[in-house]
Image 1: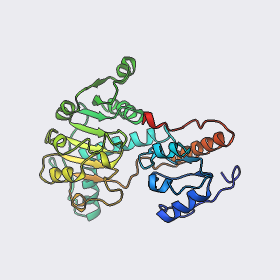
Image 2 (image 1 turned 180 degrees about the vertical axis):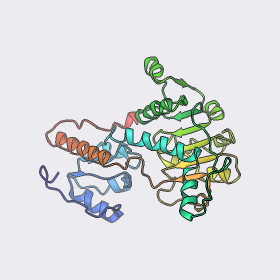
Image 3 (image 1 turned 90 degrees about the vertical axis):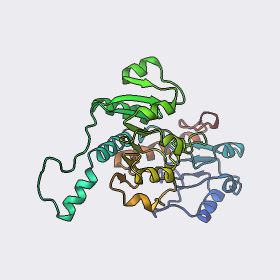
Image 4 (image 1 turned 135 degrees about the vertical axis):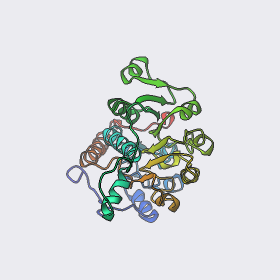
Length: 307
């Protein structure tokens, strides 16, 4: 970026404060925020006349008021596809970690209390043959489906739109029009849909109660899709067998009652954290900015009507 543009970099690897964001949007032609920056209508109201593009470093734009930005003549771009494989890998990792009790095993080894192998110690569950219900069958959901099938799982899914027959057949995936019916019959629920007003608490208390007592849920998408308080209550009561969470409803503020549960695996939003993924995200940001600077439509333009 420094070779192409006059760039003001933020070297500190931490979220910008509100005041810093205001300062940035008042002076810049292009803002490059991350998924932790809230670009809402009150902030956009303070934007300077020069700001014409928000080139988001990340695929998710749920924290950007895209409609208000467009009304003010500000385009928004993102970096789709760059985190697909990495997030799908982490989804499978969480499924294995929860069902095979990997963190519990690590704690036993770390404590020095392991007394050796025994027939009934650390018994988990076999994932082959289990039904996985994927909530959200976009790029990441389909990548999860391919991996799940390779592990011998039966793939089911619920999506806003049903996949084309040839795609569905290639994935060997069964479509459920009713999310309630799918949730009630799955052994594993994988959350892979974006956070939008329509998906906020999509897995609410009522829907969580439909899950089988021996089922587990994993979330590598957005924490707001699950009612975290309801999930915590059910996990503590043994009404759900386990959970693997890489994202949380209140960002980095994690419900403390989740922290001490042996049947829960918590990760610090690592789903897309690979060197390769971060580099690809940066490359897409640069392409979007350069294309816009050259007077053309950014290739990854976000359109409010299709969010």
